[in-house]
Image (cartoon, rainbow, N blue to C red; front, side, top):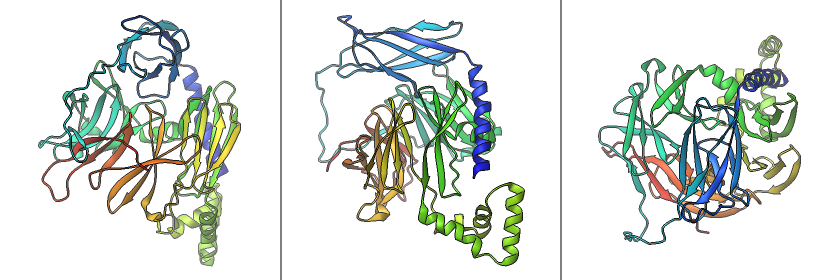
Length: 443
């Protein structure tokens, strides 16, 4: 595996050299009350769909340093105020730009609300003419992957919060079969297709697709999880090996440090045993292939035997999240939540148990992050119905449960306190509709 790590590091060095050559822009300004003009302290300012985030100081001032862009959308939030999305053209802007923003107080008057015995999911968008196959969030809108018959003739749609379609765009046919959206560490929504991965840029509600080679995205972008304190957090994860590492790569001096190693020791023992179960001629073949590829013979043996495709093998899952100045890593094999500071130093490790429910089959080995509220949820399923539990980033403990109302909800994502998903009733002629439910936790 050392050879794989070395190759990945070399790719990161190449990518970083490219990034260093890019221009950066400093965005600064003041967030104020729209009516009193008083500065708002602790208002959240985030570049839409990205990890670039800060809060205002006592005087309502903020400062963000981001890579050069032609267009930027800032999402500004403060409790008791209406969230605002501020767009700005940065074409021709030098090193810095002032973007000051005012927020309107949220209305306190309550409108008429229908009362049901149980809250109903909101249908955001549904049409008898096409199905929704995937979705992502853009500003206060949604990017949707849709198709009338086949995803070989897919369309992208931009819709507002009420489900009104603002614009549509046909996915280029040369991309082949459209599959799903992938959000990268820079906050871009990417459309994964059969032949290309398209980076989706929005310019004044207009789609601009940039084709990227699949192998380049897999080598340069997917291994990178996030950034913190001028460092790139990346992994050498490989789904066919029961151990991987998280690293921090300093863009300034190209120094690399290991943050943590994740290993399923019981699975590793079974993985290595595959070599010894081979016949003598197969062992010889495995050793020769290992020398040619410069990898461990046990890796070759496990691939030869098909162990990683069997029911006995499950790829590792230990997600990492960066929130403000802290790195949180959920190690589901040591049953520990690790906290690491912005300089890569371990803060503590706390026991976790949410991944060992009474019925172990319910835990789906999936966690989701609400990028607006910076909360984490673990996903479970019982009798085809999903439910989620909010897991504290501070202590790793279960904060409460919420069950989705529709059976077999698909493409579950969490955003700003809502659970979003796609659903079509079983044995129904209805197309796949796009829904959301407000998350209300219960013990």
